[in-house]
Every structure is written in C-alpha cells, then in structure tokens.
Length: 465
Ligand SMILES: [Zn+2]
Ligand SMILES: [Zn+2]
Image 1 (tube, protein in one colour):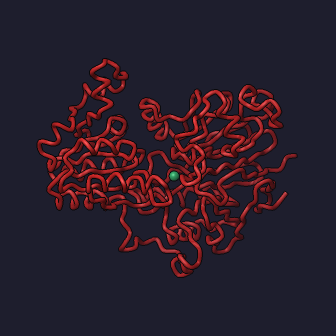
Image 2 (tube, helix red, strand yellow):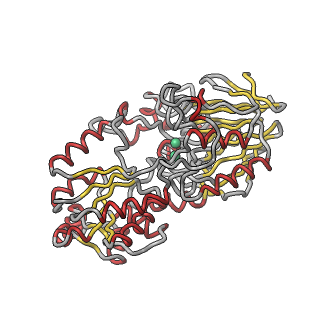
Image 3 (cartoon, protein in one colour):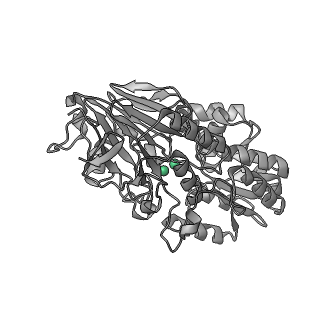
C-alpha cells in the first residue's frame, strides 16, 4: 500500500477531541490528541475517583481516547486489547498538537514516550508554566518543539506549522505533505483576536504551499434557524457588535471605573492576551491587579507587563505557615508582592482581583459590597455546564453582580466562510462543530467523513477507500 490514507478517530461532530491519522507507507502523523469538551456529560464529576495507574484502560473503555494502533504502551493496554502496543509497531509515527486547549492536548500524556509529540515553541513555553503549577496533563513524558514556517519530516511525510490566531499562545495550523498530495489542518482560529494578520499570512502561506484538502474547525456554525444563510456569506470585516480581544481591556476598565467596590475577574489563563489586557485595564482604571499564583506564574514567564500582585489565598497562607510552599511558589512570592484579603478589605475599590471558579470560596472573606464580578471567558463558560448554575448560587449568596465581558476564541461564521473562500480547496472537511454541514466550499466539494472508514488522498482528490 503506497497510497496516502486518512482515518478520523474523533472530533467530527463534537467540540474538540479531534484525532486524525494520515499515513503514507510506514510513515504516520496523528494530529491533535485532546478530549472532547462536554461538561454536561463528564463522567468525572469529582466524585468518581480516577485510577492513576489504570487511566489509559479506563479512558479507552469509556471511549474518551481513540483506539489507535502503536500509540499506547503494552503495560497500559487491557490484557485482551486488539490494539498493537507502541513497542510492537514498526512504522514511524509522530503526534502533532495544534494548540494547548484541553480538547486538543488533554490526552497527549497517554502516548508512549517513544512516539514524539510536537508542539510549537510558544506552546512549549506555556506548557512548562502549566506543568510547574500542576496544570500539566496526566502522564510522564517529554515534548518536542517545532516552529512556524519551518518544515520537518516524519519519515516520508513533510509537516509545516503555520502560525494562527486563537485565544491561546502558540496556536498553529499544519500543512502536511506526502508524495500523493497535501492537506491543511487548521486547528482552531479566529479573526477578531489580537493578531488577525496571522490568519491573513496563514492563508497566503498555505496557498503558496498548495493543498488538496482543508480540514477546518466550525465551532460557531449553527442550524439554519439560528444561523440563516445570509449570515454565512464571506466577510472579512468585523461586525460592529463583536467584541475583539483588544476591546476587552477597555470594557473591563470601564466596568471597574463604574464600580466603587472591588472588581473581580474570571478569565481562562492560557489566554496570555487576556492576562495582558487585564493588566492594561487595571492600569487605566487606577486599580492594582492581583493575580492568583498559577496565573502569575504564566504572566511572569510570558506576560508583557510585570506589574501585578499575588493573591495570598487561604491555601497559600496555610502552606506558608507550615513551611510547605512548593519551590515555584516560594520563588514567585519572593519576586512579586502579595496581598491577603485583609489587605484588600482595607480599600476594596483599589483592586482588580482574579477569582477563578475553583477559587470561588475566597469571595466569602472579601468585602464585596458594591463590587462587581467580571466574567471574562473563565470556566464555567455557559449554562450548558452544570457548574454555571453553581457559580450563580455562590454569587447570590453574597449578592454580587455578575457582568459578562468576553469574546470567543473561534471565528464567526462569516469569517470561517471568508477563510474557506480564500483558501478555495478542492475538498473541504469541516469538523470540530455541531453543524459541520453548514460550511461549504466556493468551488470544491464538501466531505463529511465517518468514523471507521479510510479515505485516500490522491490525484487532487479525497475518496473513500
Ligand atoms: Zn478546540
Ligand atoms: Zn482551541
């Protein structure tokens, strides 16, 4: 068999969990290796205990990770597994990670260490911060880096990462080439982020490299009722009602100025642009910004602005007292000033304080009178997550007003269509979406793949094998 084949293991009609294998002879790349994002159907509700030494078996049983040959260690597979362990797989495989959102990288630690896992150098810098603070993925292995615009080979397959804008540092698309042809895998992207020019260059670079098929995310697509056809026309401009990443800081600043009490914010801290925006907002509102320690560690390594305080939570206070601070935290606390709730309560209106969902109980020590809770894309993201209702209960216990100031990490439907039309692929494979069928190519053919089938890339076409 010398044809290039593609197999889809996940992400076709879900948000994330995209896993695709592309193989040419004995060379294979697998791109993205995350976990599907679906908080309402999460088996691990905090009550079921994870079994650390049996996670791969358990995740396979639950269908949370894909059944792929040659990826998992023999000792991690169930005794009766039909899967070929990594130790017995003779071909050359690498896994490519487009960016560090859990739905794209959450399972990468399960891969046998003999199989290289690549991410961009920017992603690696973020990952090192996450690992330091205990937010790394399960599994003990190392990760390889790749760089935007610099091709590398996995056996006979040539891979070129292309920089994109998404609500996380380090995001890229992959151009993947075999002697039979090329494809583009976009990962996740948007055009209302801080760097839309990355998307423009991506389109130019991709066209220069050439491709038969584009595999593209379609998170923002909806059914025809919610998204009429006219809102799916290609348009690169920014709709007036769409908040961009660069608008966020002025909105947060305005809201803080309108508040006489404390201003709290809940963000997703893998979005460095948002951390930078918060620091900017604090400065323009005349408030000191206080970050949670884990976020401060990211800001310390990757942030533009180093003027912030560390919040001394109840956990940090007790760890300090008992001499149990981890090294990274001790270093952080010696590099930056810290403030406790007692300090903050002396003048709550002087602060912009981070309060993530999992730290919500810290609110009970703070004077939140006439304060505001600025919800800026931190979890829980919406009422599809049972935790959303829970957050509302916590906030109403202290009568704290919640204001939503956020923007999506995913391209709007019109931007998606614009990007597709610019790329103008012969074959468009939309996925990472509840309604992939809504995204149609201008001239080419839409392909909606199925699980369990093999697709062949050859002669400028993708066909069922
Ligand atoms: Zn995603
Ligand atoms: Zn993402």
